[in-house]
Image 1 (tube, helix red, strand yellow):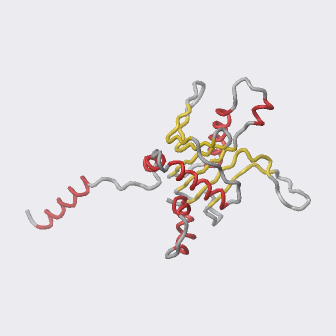
Image 2: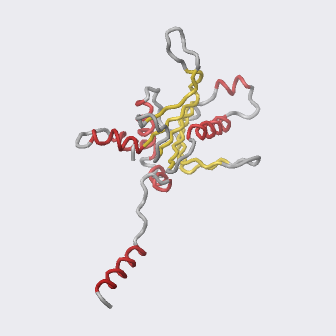
Image 3: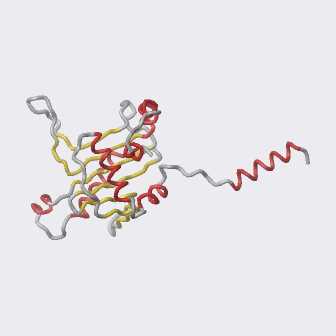
Length: 210
């Protein structure tokens, strides 16, 4: 057997036995990070609050329960599985989703957020009670694709707003119970990360774009 054949066979064997490199945005990796009880609450709170601070939203309190890969069955329709659910009692709730391929994440955020709001509603309660006790639901989508292609910002918050502005020209929120935060990683790496190289920046920023 000549040297070329040996090298070819060696390379083929190496390719065959070498494991696929882990993708840092894949669900199992995120599950492993947030399933560690010792750091899960701090990691999730740091990530969520870094995103909320960037958009000027109120920060969340101490996380009291975190659930990786939460399933929400529905006997009358399709069931749902959520990557990371983080709760602050029943007052605030965040869902962190990792998405590798293109998808309508705004409508998906509304769908998922509605499921959480419905799950939290007390069965048999009066509508006034349900509306008064609705938690703040924060949907965070960490995306490995460009969602809003014609905008350069990597952080795209989406919320319910009145379409007609006030006399001052400012638009006001119609509800603060559900907000979708889209984090577009490719834009961050393309436009923001080069300026951060060689400079110290907070751990929350690193977590936000991992």
